[in-house]
Image 1: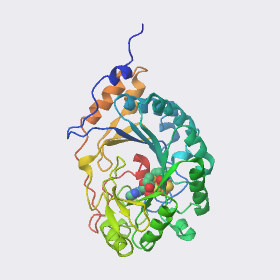
Image 2: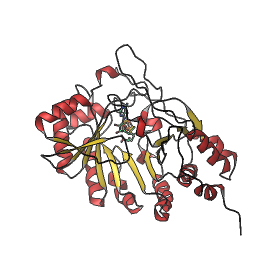
Image 3: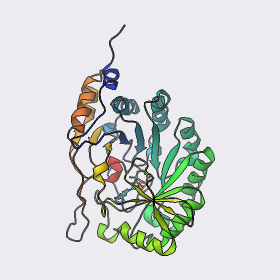
Image 4: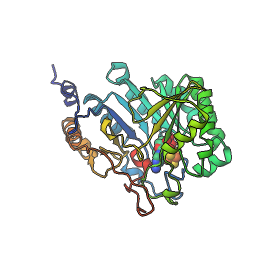
Length: 344
Ligand code: SAM
Ligand code: SF4
């Protein structure tokens, strides 16, 4: 009988625990830094993307993700950039779905801007994806154009319809933007809950250079919540999705509303995740620059021993948390890389 591979051997090892006692069980993977939109808070209009040759192949991404699954990761989120614009992306979903069937993975999911869902929703469902996050910051077509620069509102709404039709559970993510969509949050709540979707609101984070000034965009969710309380009855609930969102139930709609508040409330104490870029760089914290080069470990051998070792070494230096700051004196982003590289 052949000897067990490093990945099989690692399955028998204890789960990954970081220096602060947090179990790392969630990997987010940015499969491309490219996107068919140019959202104002995420990218500058004329972004320089990574040279295509630097990208890991889909086979390499599969091998890397599988290494994490072998080390106890049971939730994988595919993101980007826009994950569904990566060529042949369904191959990766299909490959990774074997871990759902084996029971090693509890969830395989994605975050998308929705534009490609008319094409992919059914195939995603067929590979075992159950829930998806769709980013939607406004319900007004002209405003949508202003926020995304290149996006088409109708295409995204068609995408949401396609996801629903395919039987995918949809959660809407909206970034709360001062002077842009702050007058629309009530409508987003009514829209999402009216369709039976959860809605999560997100504060803008200072990541990467954009064309504008982030202080002009930043809207604390504490303020949004106080305003929502004028229209709705919000009841704190213990519901969690394994992420940093804190949820309330909106009594009038019966729906759930989440708040992700990296700026006003630091949620790092319960962080269970790490993030992999499309070039194989692992960031142990969204808000810190320390990273591990897993591509080198991956390519050094066809055996996974060095890869698993590099993963373990990286987890052993996961930092305690981020220190994002947005104020008028701090003009530079807290981290230089864009959210589209690390994956939101
Ligand atoms: N393109 C996909 C999408 O838009 O859903 C996936 C990648 S995108 C980077 C993931 C999420 O990050 C989106 O919900 C987006 O609104 C959010 N995001 C991007 N830049 C952000 C920033 N600077 N602060 C907070 N959220 C941001
Ligand atoms: Fe693209 Fe998503 Fe960034 Fe918008 S938020 S530019 S859709 S990656």
